[in-house]
Length: 304
Image (cartoon, rainbow, N blue to C red; front, top):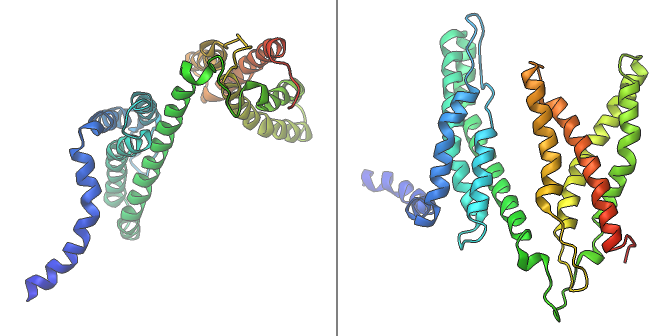
């Protein structure tokens, strides 16, 4: 009787493990799982920091770059497969989150070893929910990145970008309005850059104004980058022969970020990502101007 009482709750839990067993035995997900597992040593290496002798560490920082790269690779790999890229990204995130769990457990163990009794109790209570939250966020981010990558790859396929003769589609590049935020970025970026340059070393009022422009300019640059990609990959009807070179239009802003980032890192600037973002903004503005000029010649700029 006691055995049945104990096994009854276990049986109610076991069916919830069925998706886990199915995923582990699904050959189509093998690459996604291996990609997630491959990120673990890189995550540990990039996130590992020496612990001060007199300090207490709880949580710690985790580098997300390895998992970001893995999710992009998985999204590309599963973009043309029956297995959904989102499902593959979930398994990449689950496998890669092992590195996050190991780091958090190491930092929590340091806290319990060097901290007071109160900190030890606090760390012991906080660790389980923190691990669940960390694994959940890691999985969600990996799945989202893999899905976005797969959709981007599918938009780049020739079948999507070119409308065959005699075929009509509900929407093509002539109906696209994604050029509007791109044009807004081209108009707003120069005055924002002037304010940022002029405010360097000025009073607090200028500093607040430059901070406001920066808070607007950075999100607008991200929106403009997405708008550039979507508008450039909209289907082209038979009468429009212009097919934008996506390696150039999307690659130049990314190359601007990487180049300035590497230069800043070589010069040992504390946060090279900030100068890298300026490189991205400038390269994106030049790219956007060139794209809008060529687009106007072939498509026009009116709102239909």
